[in-house]
Length: 113
Length: 113
Image 1 (cartoon, rainbow over the protein chains, first blue to last red):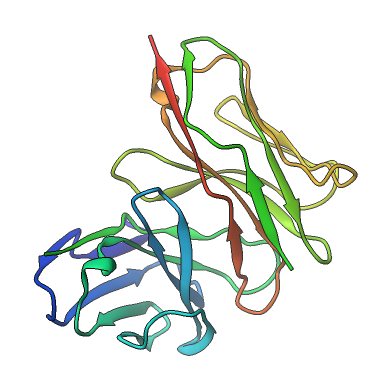
Image 2 (cartoon, each protein chain N blue to C red):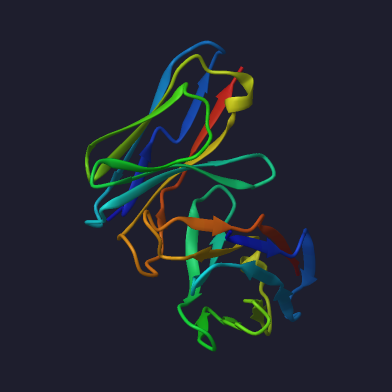
């Protein structure tokens, strides 16, 4: 059973396009996250949702918009893609509070040409 | 604020060598500390964790001890294998709203036969 899944695994698209990445977790967690990992493996938190409510919103362009239809899903929509958006995007989930570890999805490698 | 400083890589070791990857942190309050591992082409996986001072986390032959006096959480393994080749991330969570994690920059390890 896959705990945190993401689709698609690879996404190649042209500048200016709009794309979405989907994330689902079956762990019963109430908090989900999006991270961006650049080519040097640096991880940057982008967003966090708890029970469909946005609770972390780091400084990212407003072309990025997360959407959480329910607490098991957190999708990431990106408008007007730019070359600099090329990266690996990871979804993660955890329970809220305490020292609970985060569980990561396999990642979506986005390439903007 | 919270931050994690991690030993820069890349690190190259021969099989059966001793591994240390240094990690120090800055945090308000009493954070939990984690090591994650990322194998090529995969998402991050929790390797071990420690939730309070003097706790030792261990898994798959890896160990790390939460040292409050030196604000450190160094990762060690007595005898590395080729299969340990991966990127290792130190992280902390202060258990605040959203259970935000603070990741180090990652250390790439290559083990050669």
